[in-house]
Length: 20
Image (tube, rainbow, N blue to C red; front, side, top):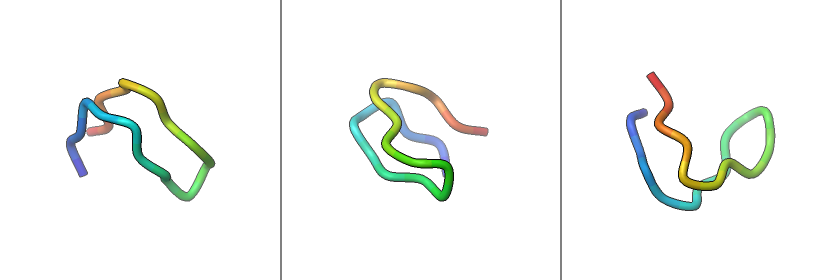
């Protein structure tokens, strides 16, 4: 997933972090 918004990943909450 590529997202630059508040989202929940398997690692936990990710805030404004682009995920490859």
